[in-house]
Length: 109
Image (cartoon, rainbow, N blue to C red; front, top):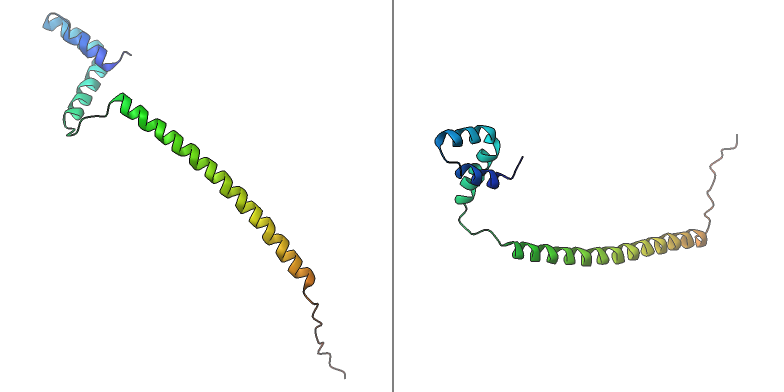
């Protein structure tokens, strides 16, 4: 299956109506796809961005993601350290807590 735009150009280049119809039947899906895309793009009010603009935006997003990943790793490491500190602190508190003796309510009969 060739690109729809390539097939459409070849379709337009066919000489007679009979040749066009034969070519159309052979490449109907590509030609119809091209026409549908062309129709949709004609309704767009603003111009489409250039490849250079899109590529630049992708590069910005990649850089931003890299920075976010670095920040996440720092924060995650700090969180793990704080969790270890919390567990150690609770362990120390439990060890230093005085043992309470429970009064027994044994009834002597």
